[in-house]
Length: 235
Length: 235
DNA sequence: TCTGAGTACGTACCAACGGTATGTGAAAGA
DNA sequence: TCTTTCACATACCGTTGGTACGTACTCAGA
Image: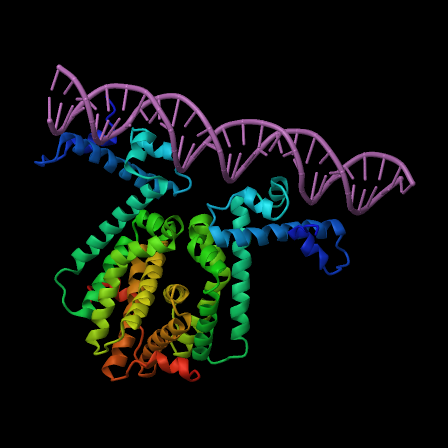
């Protein structure tokens, strides 16, 4: 059989969009093909071990095409990263749809996130290599726009439901901490021999921590002011 | 003045150790010089942007020397990583010395960790690039032996003080989650405009979370069994 | 003191890779 | 139809990690 290039496969089921020339469609299809193939390779072998030749080879194009669409290797990685992150956040958003209670939302969000984190692409590209390849700055920017943004929403909802209204900095701090906890939890799940069991354990642990906060809130314990720590001693 | 190579500087204040030949001492000094210079360069520019030529140039030796001591670039990075991690864990261990109460220990450990995480070398080499360069496997192995091991001890102490005795898997899960939380907290501190304030906020937040757990423990709430989650439905 | 071996480097070189400069043919506008 | 433009292909370069090999110095043993 005649080998069809990845770009051709994409073209074969392109919808007809009025106002978009065939040329533009073709161009977009090769770009998508490049991102797709790069995504596979990055996931399987990692960034450093994946050469541009390997990427363009898989996509059945040449470096000329790649450098026409991207400014370099890192830009390709960034495109892959963005796609994976976008897919992840839409998955979580979809799961969240419908639930209204903040505590329930938190738990559902956690579950959805634990599913995401089992995806090898997410593990490799986002968690493992994202910070190193993109640099901390860009990595955080990207996260802000997707998964971390979601966590922040959830944390705000939970804490406000507990009648705590905190400064934007404390909200940020709490969100970062919870995000870190969830990432580690996800990591724990993703490397577990039995993911099912690991998910149950993680839900138990985080549920327990949330219950602790809830208990404090309901018994009227107030959140201390960080300023006090700066002024006086500890305790 | 005659430029002294980094290795010579190290040699100049070497203690006399009986049973160790001068040749061995010299060899060790160039190895240390290589690790030191590599550490600086990796911290400043990152792994990928640091060439072997730059490293051996800074250390005033050639690639022959480097490849005599290390199997390759990654091995050099690993040596740097190990040194930074070891320094960090000894710092924390020293801070922990003396305190006995598990809750107090946890807070002191947190504080020590928040200091560590402000070191640019720790940020760059351990947090940012460690997972990508070493790979997840080796990265976790190394962590296990240093910082994560400490966290695990602390979590065990706290939870056992709360009369919870949990399975080793649940302990692992809790430890991972707390470690993630602390890492994120550290990240939050390390990138903050005002680290002093950030430290206070982080301590407030984590203190609050710990207080929640403590409250549950003291009011006799038991930790649910993860098995229940697996058998039945949720909630 | 001499000698041989082993070790700690230095030197010369290579293949692979990311990146660039330039060429080319087909589609789109005139 | 002519021309321009754009989406690629081709050819090439500098740098880099890694290797093969050469060399001088140290040190144990005779």
